[in-house]
Image (tube, rainbow, N blue to C red; front, side):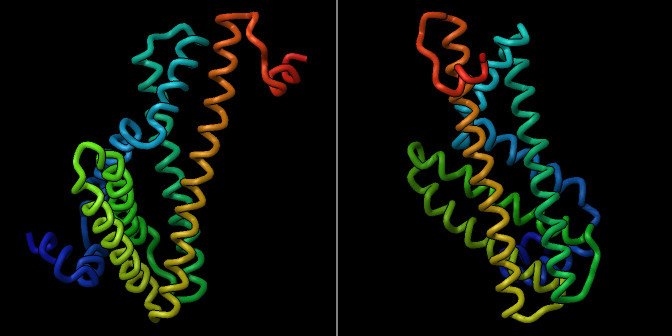
Length: 214
């Protein structure tokens, strides 16, 4: 209960107390749940369904199983990306500040990443619940605030160094998210064209498909 109050009233104290927290597994589970919800209703859920259709078409498996495999794959990639970002931040923070426990940093940033995913997912519900847009902006702001205090507390650095490290972290998150979205969109379009051509062979192929067949 006290931790919940500190989360809103004293975010700097909240992230400080996380170094003694024993709820590492629950924090990771919360991150996976939010990432799973985002995979089902987020921006790329239609692309994931296209990949599932392609997987079902090629392997001859049920669509439900193919969709489960695609969502599981995205969850694994999300966890790996979060892990790599955290490791890079730890190296950068250890260079400009005091080296500290990676496990504690994982614990702190897992909350930040969970809030970011929650805010991003909430944006896709604004057409149903208009107030979600305001809630999403607030959660984004709080995620940034907690991230700032987490980095400052983790590496014992000043405000200027923390601002620089926060910008570096934000750049990593945005770059990873943007690149993954572009990769999904590009490959989903290619797979859709291949499936359409196999279903109706006389359809014209794209230049990329012709080169691959040659």
